[in-house]
Length: 167
Image (tube, rainbow, N blue to C red; front, side, top):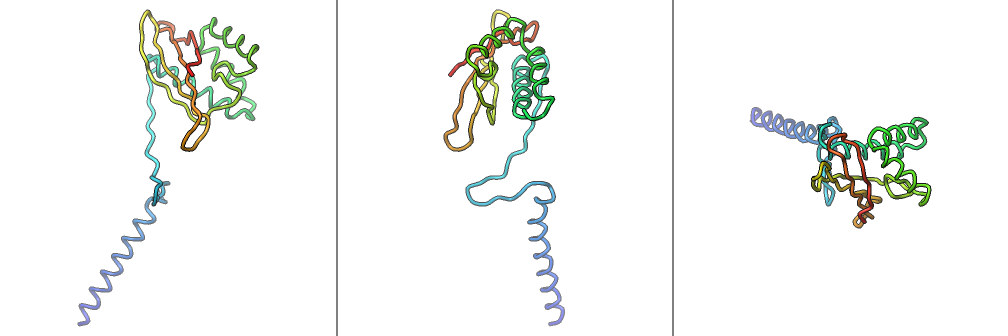
C-alpha cells in the first residue's frame, strides 16, 4: 500500500509540474496564452528585395510613416525629407510640394495625420513602370477608416514617379 501511495504522489507532482510548465513557458518566450475571443498574435516575418518595385514602395512607406509617427524625435523630420529625396523622382518631389502648399496636408499620405497601419500590393506593370496600391488604415476597431494611394514606380530608376489618391 505504501508503494501505491508513493506512486500516486509522484504522479500528482508530475502533473502539477507539467501544468505549471505549460502556463509559464509562453511567458518566458514573450508570448501569452489568450482565451475567449482573442487569439495569440502570429509571428511576423518581413523580407524584401531592393530590385522589386513593390518592395521599395513598401520600404518607403514603412520608413516614412515611422519617421512622421516619431515627430518628437529631432531626426524624424530630416529622415522624412531624406526618404522623399531618395525614393521619389525630382518631378514627383515637386508635385508633392505643390500639393502640400495648396492642401496643407502631407503629399505622401494625402492627409494631415498619421496612419496606424499600412500595406502595399502589386497591381501591375507596363511601359517601364510598376503600379502598387498602398492601403492606409487610420484607426483600429471593427470599422477602421481606410484610404488608398496608387503609386507608380519607374522600373529602370526604381524611383516613385507618381502618387494619386485612389479613395
